[in-house]
Image 1 (cartoon, rainbow, N blue to C red):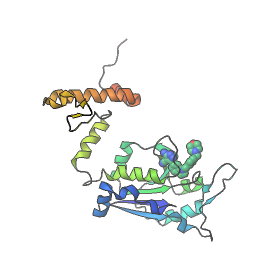
Image 2 (image 1 turned 135 degrees about the vertical axis):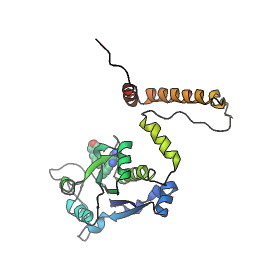
Image 3 (image 1 turned 90 degrees about the vertical axis):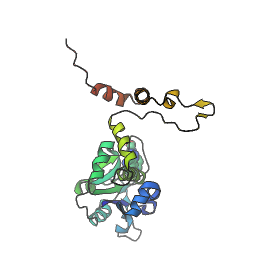
Image 4 (image 1 turned 30 degrees about the horizontal axis):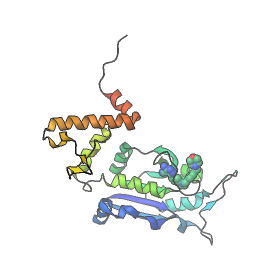
Length: 236
Ligand code: JEE
């Protein structure tokens, strides 16, 4: 079974939104399992301290390596990658999520404060990954996003709908616009072509819309997509 271990100082926030809908049903059904490790229980002092001031000065606090190290050492990793959610990690991609979903599972470390002592990252071989280039206040929400993205790919979680969708993402285009009844809503009709019953015309319209949206919103994706389609090299 795909197995996730999450280390956090906020164990109560898990499974959070993962407990609802598909991921939650799959959790109950035993498609995947989640264990949540409270880092604070590995603190040894009277106040259960997990952080300390940064060596060399500076703002904020740093998560102590000894406490986190002990917490990690209780987790039977068994071939699972150990990931540290971090604003300086490599941004997660759908390709990486797909790879993680085919592994036996993941061990996720949620930092807090300004970050984690560098020595525990090195000593326990933590790989830093990020959700994107904006700053969260801790790793928990990023961990939930990672888990959600992996779990929906596990066999039997989403059925057929997911795989088709993924294909279109790996084609490198944003999705075309969707519509459903009523046929006119607040004076806005569904595009006529979608009601025409002409399936090749519908496919062409969707392709053109997907290309337009990608060009407008994601020039980075568009450059890759249009660049990767077989174009003969220009001769001098
Ligand atoms: C884990 C603590 C908060 C705030 C210093 C200096 C960083 C850490 N995509 C993602 N964004 N943020 C996270 C993330 C944030 C976390 C932790 C993940 C643990 N924090 C924190 C500020 C700073 N800043 C200037 O550059 C930006 C460090 C994340 C993921 N995954």
